[in-house]
Length: 213
Image 1 (cartoon, rainbow, N blue to C red):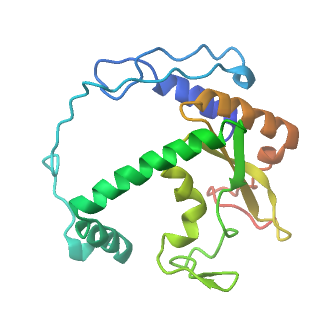
Image 2 (image 1 turned 135 degrees about the horizontal axis):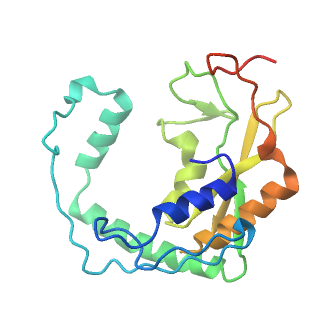
Image 3 (image 1 turned 90 degrees about the vertical axis):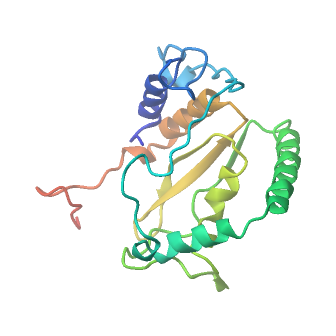
């Protein structure tokens, strides 16, 4: 989304704010970004009364199931297997998770954890099938460090956290309190300024591809 935290904050400020054409927009205007390192907390939004329209295809041709990849097919099949009881149970569990999250962040302002469980891998590999000898049973398992945070609904940001001995980039995931997007951006900006990891960029050739040097 952005090369620096300051750019991400600017993008969020541009995208957020009231607009009658966007029913999911925040009810309040974004804060003035006079100093991205000290941006104020984002106000909570209220989506009560939101009207949602549904179109199965937007009047456009949709890909046939036989033409999509196996991972997409697997996702659709698992979704079709869900029952009303499954969704009800998920709602209860998510409410309990929200309560546990509130208790956790009573003693912490930010959670720092890995973004991904593996270093960058060969682009020809469909997905990581094993980590430290532990089989990854689906193409989602190796991304659990990210989706376990996504399911909480908390704001999270990935910032450059260093490099492997081979020079491959490693990310650090920072997670903030619910609706604490701007506070989290301030923390990420401070981390970026203190480490300088985000200033390293690959050299590009004339075609825009990364060079080996």
